[in-house]
Length: 86
Picture 1 (cartoon, rainbow, N blue to C red):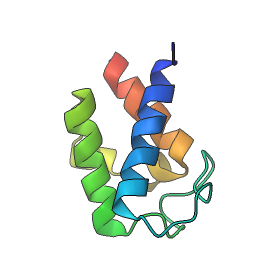
Picture 2: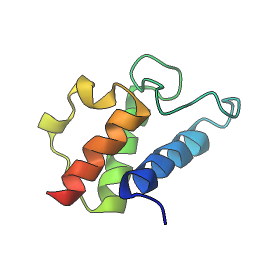
Picture 3: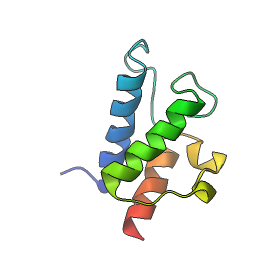
Picture 4: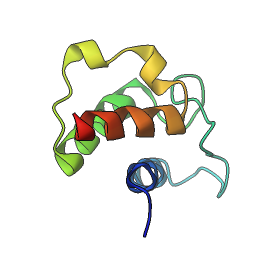
């Protein structure tokens, strides 16, 4: 059984792959920055946060849009998982 953060992490990868099908397989890793990479544009990041909020039942307010939360795929997965546990 996957760890909870693993489920969130996989949801992020699936969203990025669906949103940006031109990315080569394996080009986005857990360490990939969502801010500085070409994985998502700014609208894509907002859409991802809404998607994750809906999928995992977490409320994401504008204070949550701290760039530190997008330092990497793994950082965002942990942030969402922490919000789920709260």
